[in-house]
Amino acid sequence: MIRLATEDQPVLQQELQDILRRNQELVVAGQFAAMVMHEINGPLEAVHNLNYLIQQEADNASQVRFYSNMLDEQMVTLTKLSRQTLSLYRSPETRESVAIASLAEAALRVHQRKISTKRIILRKRLKPDVTAEIHAGDMLQVFSNLIANAVDALPENGTLSVRVGRCADEAHVTFADNGPGIPAPILSRIFEPFFTTKKERGTGLGLAISKSIIEKHHGRIRSRSTTRPFRNGTTFRISIPLSAKAG
Image 1: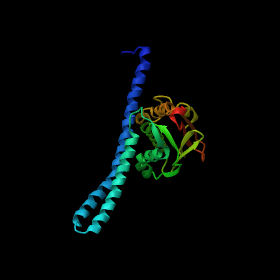
Image 2: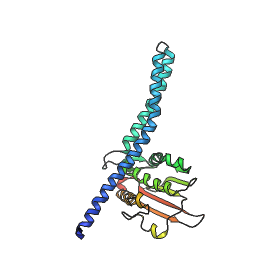
Image 3: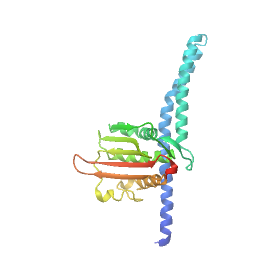
Image 4: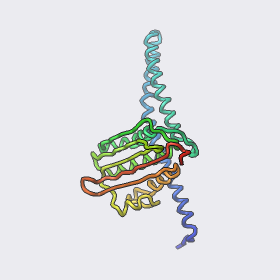
């Protein structure tokens, strides 16, 4: 059996962590792309139908104008979706002022099918005027990971609360569920790379990567959880500077 030199192990572990991080980024990007295609499909179908109606009513000027106005509305929707998607996936070095509530909504849409399947009660308190200078794609990955963990932990008809607010020069994002909770010995290790309780379903990198991304934005991520009956649940709270210069 070949044994690796001890000094090589940290390097190999970091390389493996980087590979798995890129893989998770691709998974989130794929999920988001599927959601975007689903949202684009409706307006595209409407454009196709309206174009057909315009051709059929070519000799009726008032009807052509009516259908043209409706077509313009669908094109505005498509343009908005396109711009939102492009704003989320730019160079990792690019940071822009992003509405945190919109990002939270996008992450929720990624998991909407699972949320609906489990009939999860969604409670949102998202202040629309909270913006921060961030890399939107990275932060979407963090939000998506925390929502995915909550949805996995929740039973049917469980509750997921998502809140966006601000205090002084920080944006605060909270994800709270009333799932079974995390035992204290496990809670103390959840941000450790490769630590997982999901066995074959988990890499143990989701929260470690999320913590790394938050810290790269000079922010903090904190957790609290309890398994006490009738008070059980887990909460993650993210705090990030509103301005990149503040970090």
